[in-house]
Amino acid sequence: SSAIVWDEYLTGPFGLIAQYSLLKEHEVEKMFTLKAGRLPPADVKNIIFFVRPKLELMDIIAENVLSEDRVRSPQRDFHILFVPRRSLLCEQRLKDQGVLGSFIHREQYSLDLIPFDGDLLSMESETAFKECYLENDQTSLYHAAKGLMTLQALYGTIPQIFGKGDCARHVANMMIRMKREFPGGQNSIFPVFDTLLLLDRNVDLLSPLATQLTYEGLIDEIYGIQNTYVKLPPEKFAPKKQGEGGKDLPTEPKKLQLNSAEELYAEIRDKNFNAVGSVLSKKAKIISAAFEERHHAKTVGEIKQFVSQLPHMQAARSSLANHTSIAELIKDITTSEDFFDNLTVEQEFMSGIDTDKINNYTEDCIAQKHPLIKILRLVCLQSVCNSGLKQKVLDHYKREILQTYGYEHILTLNNLEKAGLLKLQTSSRNNYPTIRKTLRLWMDDVNEQNPNDISYVYSGYAPLSVRLAQLLARPGWRSIEEVLKMLPGPHFEERQQIPTGLQKKRQQGENRLTLVFFLGGVTYAEIAALRFLSQMEDGGTEYIIATTKLINGTSWIKSLMEKLEPPPF
Image (cartoon, rainbow, N blue to C red):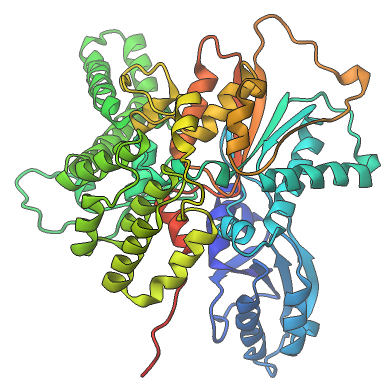
């Protein structure tokens, strides 16, 4: 019998691959969250620690082990599993604390890519972007390469690899090297994927900064989706009872799982929010008509058929009720004046209006002390859309931010500069307009209801990263050589040899399958845009998406912020 002690950050990702019920079948009796002090009492023989290789966690584990009552019999056995890799430094730290010998097994559990949906894999490594671009630590790129090797072992070697950016180049090099070092890994599996596209997040810094306008993107922007779950304010979900004033409204946030297993969500998740209302009202009519059928059921056979459909209809009805509530919550925000003003400024920047001078709205927001992350997103967006800001403008923003929010944020501003999000315009030329025009990143007449282009996900701006994927499929990157040179990092193509018997003969009308791997994070709006390309009638390419982390502008900027504790005096 055993108890598992979880590093809290891992519970979400593991919940997607192993439910508690499954662990119970394997004699896991108790589960605890890793925290300082003593372990809670549990009548088990084995205690297994599941942790990320982080030094600060080792100290907590050491404390747990040392405070174990040595007099107690029977003795418990300790085991430790590092996710995704063992770390020498961590084992050394445990040794320094004098507890390394207490662990019978020290293993690693290589959890690289976690399935979030039918077409979506994530490594859920929140620090990957910061490590690669600020700390020059390429561990997460090694994990990405490992994850891709595992995928190739399962689904065949991917014949073509394209990439853009320094991190992409590293990952491709590591894959080629791993393949060379394990020649035995030559598998005889028919390749499922035709192409792998590796994209650095810093090739397109703009998409995560802009407010996503798809249904799923907005849920994430406003409430934050963690490992496919979202927590929502409960007021809208209280069952309405007749004659009762809202006496006991629930106080626990309502937790819902969001993925394509839910029919209605699969249909609306990638739509522009302005197109969601009409779908919901159509669905409501269909469902109430289906429930009306019961009055027409006369014979036993008809009644039986109606009853057999009931569970599905009730599920559809509760799903509709949930999404109507969520849509109302979001609409309250999207119809607010501030949301509109913020969006207007973003769209002006993205279409190239007034990107080179101090923005009035941003100044007002600083003066009214709006959330700092909102300000940073706007200022970084302006910087990216202007290939950097003039010294005068940059200094002004920095001074305003530090004077309003506190000087401890100087480190955060420094990080944003290092990452290239907030920078000085070095040459007098602003490349963004050229990139915008060549790649058609701004579309004036956008059709939100029945979109004909990926720009619907931001109501006008087509995510650069997805445009690169689209142009790679047709007509190929040769057509945009000039623009590719303006974007950071090298672009490259590698071919992997495939044994003759395994080469694909493509049938007429059969789609190509491309795996797009975002190194440094991807937003739900970009995922929606890639799904839109997969569904296009004459697209000819379907996409599977993988990433180091699912991000939005807020969580991304947060990962780059430095916490500086004010001095105690």
